[in-house]
Length: 443
Picture 1 (cartoon, rainbow, N blue to C red):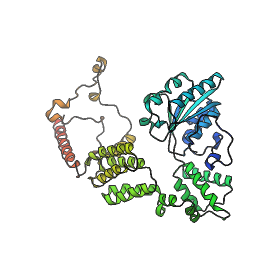
Picture 2: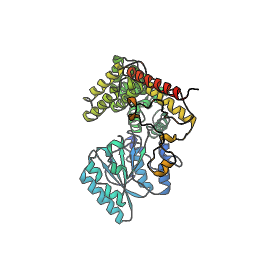
Picture 3: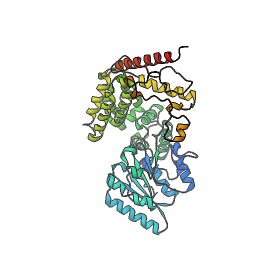
Picture 4: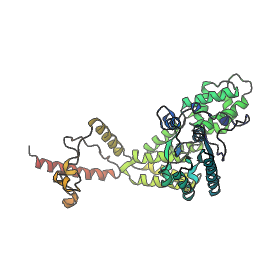
């Protein structure tokens, strides 16, 4: 289940019958958690931690509504630890100081403490650094929750002292099970298959979003025999329409966007971009997909595409919505009109496939580094030709692949954009290699 932005206190207080459905259904035992089998399945990291009774500092990274706060609370219960929660949105140095004091009180009483920081990426470097001495001393175990990549948003010092666990969006099967739990708790009418599928699609892997939406629908259901799509639309209104206009699913839309760029149609690309934003898609996800397009579909036909797209994504991170969306649109149009090549993408896949089926071969002696006398005596680096000392800085005929293999070229430039010149140059180099090797092997 999702995060609640709680403050310092106990782990599992009595549930208020008037609390939102998402809170009433929050798991009280680890066995009640839906999803995240990659962490909670037998032999998986958090399952092992629960079984051992030994907490460790960690970063829980995942989308909203995937159970970060729930897991932190359950760990506090499972380890009989004081649960001290801070919201990085509302808290600061004062709240950090109070959390340390509460942990010290817990230690004096012979009890462990877990300090949970929701949206830890919103704390600045100094605030994150404030936890370090206490994590190192063992005063408390630190659990940070974030929707952002911790590699970029969490200080390296804190990151090195915590294990990163990645939470995944709940699957359709997970959400269906959760929806049935909510329906049973509320005593609501059953949902039609179409209504259930549409509500689950709208939730997009977010448990809290699913339950909050269903609770609104259940309030309006009254004594109907079944909750159908019409009731769903009356209950959720514009919100549901915007997410799923015309019944399209999220991944269908991103597929249409990608194919429009690949097909060099900037108008269609802008249309799907606007549709996805109108439907509530996260612009940061779209930005990540644009970066993939820049490598997969444009590649070396126009290397500037990747740089320009990366800069657009970074500008969006600084400006946010709606101003930053224009930079993504600019990158999108550039990608659509840029020359296309999937040559590098295809070459990479071909090289991987070749290596997987061929196995591991030793590095040829002439390519090995020889920093010691022993290595030199074993002929490491012997007969290696230093390219910069040769004509055109190219050692014609030199071999760089392991002995005994000569695969067909992985990389074949396309006759578009910069790859026209790359292809010409590569053709010249390959011909020089062919002549040199033929001269050295007249047979």
